[in-house]
Amino acid sequence: MFNPTQEDVRRFFCAVYAKHRAGQPMEALEIIAAEWIAQHPEYHADLADADAAVARVYDGKDGRENPFLHLSMHLSISEQCSIDQPRGIRQAVELLAARRGSLLEAHHEAMECLGRMMWESQRAGRPPDGHAYVDCVQRKATRD
Image 1 (tube, helix red, strand yellow):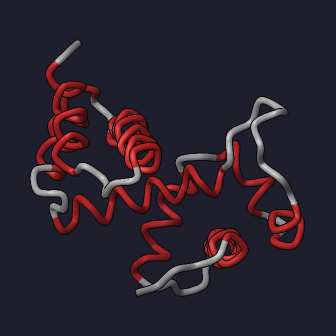
Image 2 (image 1 turned 135 degrees about the vertical axis):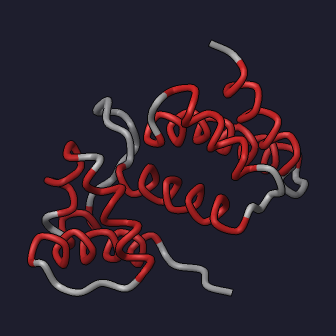
């Protein structure tokens, strides 16, 4: 199982951004990452310098979220939807995207559910509850 370090994740996204800007060929995962990076121009300065990105502490004290965590969550949700795992997540995200008129907005709302699931799992010391996660996304998809 692949378990990248924080540095690995940051260098991956910075390399994808550099490849995208240079018009270089990319692998499938890099193409997906580049699409999410393009949706977040506010992160481009962070992605332009890999060494600075690795050294930087993203603790929220400056009012900014961690762009690498955010982009990683986009990739996670994209992968979950591609394999429909947990079961039902693809349909829930698609419904949410249709209701909001935006896959980006749907992902951002699903991230709230994903983050809650992970926090509750860690706090309780038990495996993540995929059913509760899907239910959370479905609830968001069915409310205005």
